[in-house]
Length: 75
Image 1 (cartoon, one colour):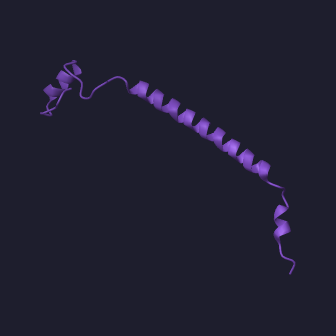
Image 2: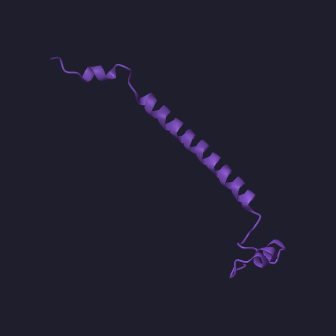
Image 3: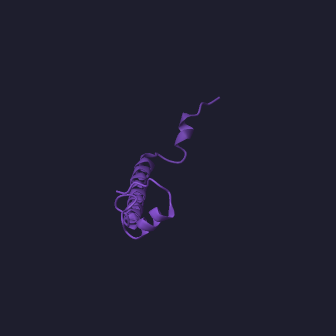
């Protein structure tokens, strides 16, 4: 791994000619982006499916639209 000690034009020319990388795994940015987007999409679909199942379960336990009226007092 290269360490830049002087910010001169010669230093950047040497880096462009391939004398060393500024950070490790240079050139894998697109791979990491694709992996991150794929994970993000997978997480959203998995979360959405789980929430849909939970909402369907809660909806099936609902006794009806007017069930709350049986708990009103007769004043």
